[in-house]
Image 1 (tube, rainbow, N blue to C red):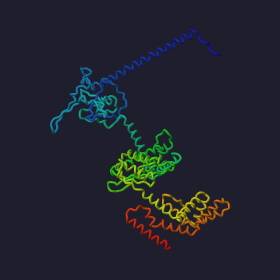
Image 2: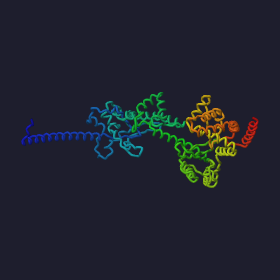
Image 3: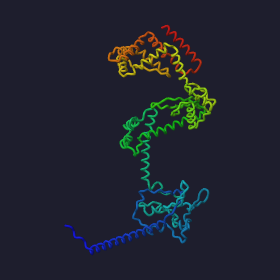
Image 4: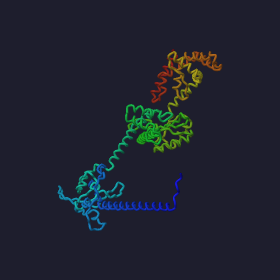
Length: 549
């Protein structure tokens, strides 16, 4: 059943009652605030009368321990403060009104050089900060009655009374509470936290240095499945401290400090790289003169990079080569190479005029006598003697020598065809590997290289050691009816060439030539005339042995 609506008289009575209650509450709150305000003003006035400063020169920079500053029931009564501040009839701006009679602090004594006296000064009650700012020491006060300095906080609130709160400290004394701090526990917690992360960083830096030194990849498809994280997990098996950290922060995610992210590892790599580069540049600047070595090569991502190397003679006479870094290269023109090299040396604060040598490959943009890089560098350093790369020049000479002989050129062309035919099909390659394994031979055919003479030696040695197995595989492919006709024809053609007596002779001859002292001598730089003569004698002796066999 619905309640009966209130009449107008009832509504007016209820409204009047609510207004009366609100008025009482407002009056009560105003009375409370007035009392609290008067109490605070009284306390502030009493504290203001008791606050003063003391000199830093007498080592009274006191840090109060937090365990001695717990509020007590002591109040700011006149009995506690009357001996702290001396009443003075002088005006409020008078120094005697602020500090009392400073002359009462004088103490006298006799020393080896005569009598002496000490006393407080007005300047002692201020502290000059490191930034030059002057700050008043509000927490210390001076009593002209006793001639001592007090800490009013200790005097009024400390449960455990100390010398500075009971008797004060006179001139020349040291505060007994100097060893404490009001934020001692907070500072201890901060120091422990700081030490924790420093210990973590030591382990992370050691891991990054190990991977970088050995040229190992840091991570795989994700940040927690690569060598970097796996190394940390391996170390954690013997390091409980690191194991606890990985358990707590191992997969914390973004926004959480763990120092385990890839960005931290990359930052450490950059810092280490800068440190190593700085050391290398210091060596270069101490040596003053240097030689420049430049070459370009594409990386795995098909981006061409220019390698910059400096060759120097150290102060102790040791000749060393230092790799400076890779520089991205878009244009292979000699002008662009010149700009890149000069800009790189300028960033390292190395003067090009101290360049005394330069060595590049035999490409026209590098070795050109008019517009090549070596000619452009000579315009900035006239004494920069150009020397072609010995290894590149030797490879070119040997390759061109082989190509001059028709039979030798045909033989190496056959080796390249053999590699292309077997490697172009996984089925053929497996047949070859299975045949080698059946005969307990760990071999594989090699491809040739236009710039590396050693690659030809490896290809010849592989064919010579697996000659019979290679022919057998080719014959099996040529007789397989399930194989395409064109493939069978090509296999039989290569097998027929290998069955040729001249091919077998070339294989044995080139293998002897490339695996003897003569080949090893050719691969090194001719450092003197005696080495060159010895090379000729070795070649003549080898030729006689070959024809005799």
